[in-house]
Image 1 (cartoon, one colour):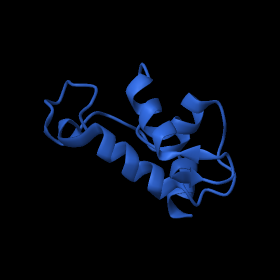
Image 2 (cartoon, rainbow, N blue to C red):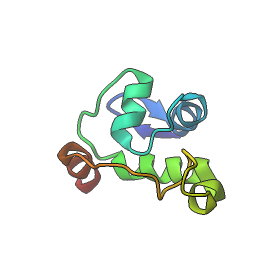
Image 3 (cartoon, rainbow, N blue to C red):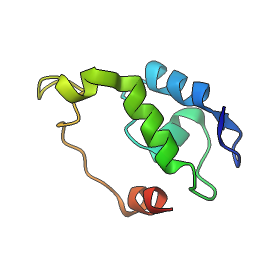
Image 4 (tube, helix red, strand yellow):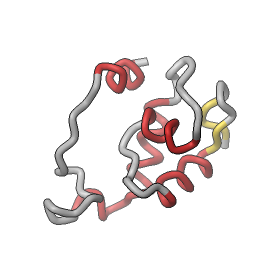
Length: 87
């Protein structure tokens, strides 16, 4: 299914980017970076975040604190991320 009509990105593209990235993408901005494009309207940010969370599955919730998959890992949000998520 197409999740970003501006860049014609599918849910498969997002899942593949999560699986292939050296450093796991946690938000739409990082997915766009992995795929070599950038956000246009931002309406897809929430859907992309949901797909990332589904792709990481239980590991993202249950990992130890030092694991790079852990949601508890240190991560600083930028204003751009919040703006995309709020769209």
